[in-house]
Image 1 (cartoon, helix red, strand yellow):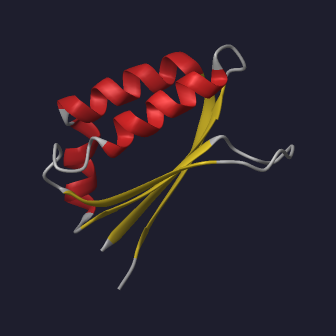
Image 2: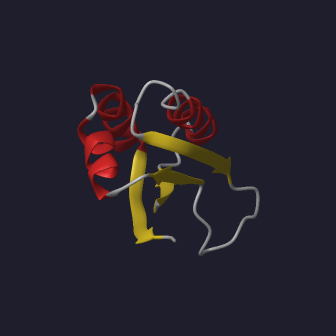
Length: 97
């Protein structure tokens, strides 16, 4: 099992609405992207310098599944939107037994 974690920091302009829209778009990938086994999307509620605005934890059967997700047209629509409203993101991927 492969675990894919991404955290996003959004631009201040229209931050709340963009965060909510990104969350909905990410959640809608479940069922739309065949290799996606699960996805948990959460909006941060703690104000701190090190806090990120939105986090996802997604799982895949393999690295190949993550690669298929990465290039899937529905995922690419989400990527395009988030890139337009986010300052930056951080990611971590690891294999779990």
